[in-house]
Length: 40
Image (cartoon, rainbow, N blue to C red; front, side, top):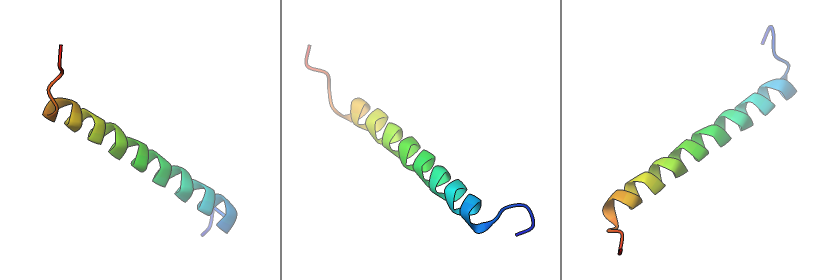
């Protein structure tokens, strides 16, 4: 790793994984919103 030491790489990896999890959660909520009818 020329530019990133292992600590910076690890931090970057954690941040990327968190962003992926957040995107997956937002997608899951959107799908559920479409599948579950809104009782109004």
